[in-house]
Image (cartoon, rainbow, N blue to C red; front, side):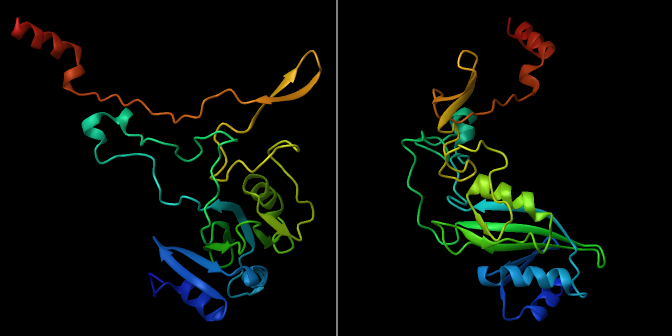
Length: 242
């Protein structure tokens, strides 16, 4: 805990002393990490306990920590070689084809679910995080029976990250097509996807075709506006040199 004087952090530590994984306070924002086996009962207590009273779940999302902290940009030497040459060689995150996709690394706590809660009664906000115990098949209990607003959020996390919410009343894809293969927000999913989808006027149906786009990273162009590029100064400089 980075701020021992935070009232909410102290209250959480007191209420859930035997179920606390960690409590972090940064920039006056409190993050409460809970183990998977306590995920549902802690959520219920956070809502029903009058001292906490987190009545509203305002957001729920999945997180994939594969490659967390890695960067494909070389920034230390980029100023000497030009920003466009700052991309490191090799395949970066998502820059590979579906057939050549890398095997996911066996890292602990790869998938997590993050929930943002709001208490109107106490005017407090809380970030609640839980790591799925199995990276091969991430499963966590659903929170729909605690906060009904979690329904579509959990469907989105299932669709994009492949996180399964046990007990969800209608867990199915919500953004991608029903026949979609894979989960597009996973770090081992190619940025170009695995198939091209288009409507064929002749066949009068949607068809799937191989992807023809080359995996690449888009490098932004940087325009530096300084005295070297001001027209009237360029003209005066040319006149002096003449």
